[in-house]
Amino acid sequence: MASWVLSECGIRPLPQIYTRPRTGHISNSKNNHSRIRFFHSNQSKTDLKLREPIGCSKERNWALKVSAPLRVAYGEEEERGEIINRVNGVEEQPEFDPGALPPFKLADIRAAIPKHCWVKNPWRSMSYVVRDVVVVCGLAAAAAYLNNWVVWPLYWAAQGTMFWALFVLGHDCGHGSFSNNTKLNSVVGHLLHSSILVPYHGWRISHRTHHQNHGHVENDESWHPLPERIYKNLDVVTRMLRFTAPFPMLAYPFYLWSRSPGKTGSHFDPNSDLFVPSERKDVITSTICWTAMAALLVGLSFVMGPIQMLKLYGVPYWVNHISPLHIFLHLRK
Image (tube, rainbow, N blue to C red; front, side, top):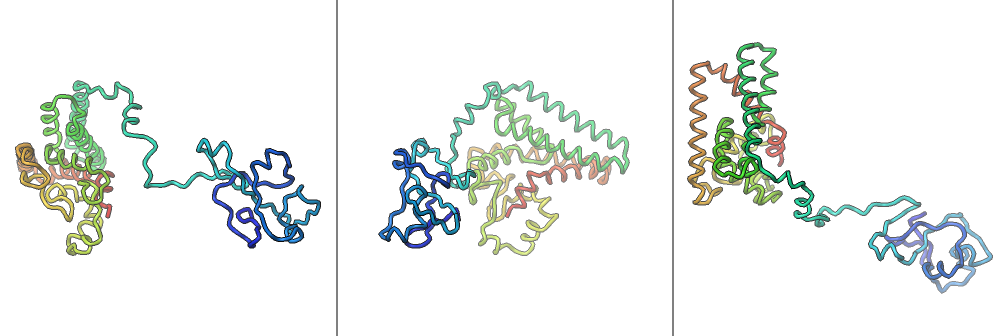
């Protein structure tokens, strides 16, 4: 009953913005008369017995004894832009509009970050590299020494996580947050990303494209949901490999080779439309480093045996690429 008010036309919806519902006696003070507006009618006083506020008539014939909110003139709260809808004393929050601009700008976020967070310390960055490389080598040595099937699953989980740590450090090199020295970023980035079979410059450039088009349905490089027209035109094999478990968990290496469905090129091809002509030398350098790492792994497989290399490197590599980030990126449709 609180959402409807009686009028000469019967029952009509209450306006969207109003203050607290009124019940009981209404004062006849000047202030109240200046702020309260009743609905008017041409009907006789006898017909309006149920609609007259208490205090305005001696007859109080409220059939259901139910109060109805009154339309109240806007006061100081509206002038401040702070009107809150209240129904029976309960505040209603305004509906969230996902298309509205945020109440802050990028400059406000940057200003809120402490200044010392913007200082790049290459020594501290290198300490993280040394720490993670030592952990990776230590885990591999311990697993190879123990060579126990109780230990191997624990090793795969731990080493896969550390491979992801190496990727994150190379990611920071690609963003330039590792240090202010571009050459240092490039050298460290190549060593780290090549060790987990990621072409450093190829990925760095495509990742830059991702940030420049973040959230864009068509131009975003990493987050690429398929439009219905492309999805329907996929062949059966591609559709199965992309959307049927467990194949999406292995999608990242294929993404590096051929990008997302509907896009052409490769992170290894300097002539890909991912890159501009001035970036081709960088892409070639990264492809050479990737090839050298792949050749090293093949050589170690002949020395240690393919099964041992699969346990030491292959499974952690797979665990690294089924991290929550990659599952999110490649299971999104």
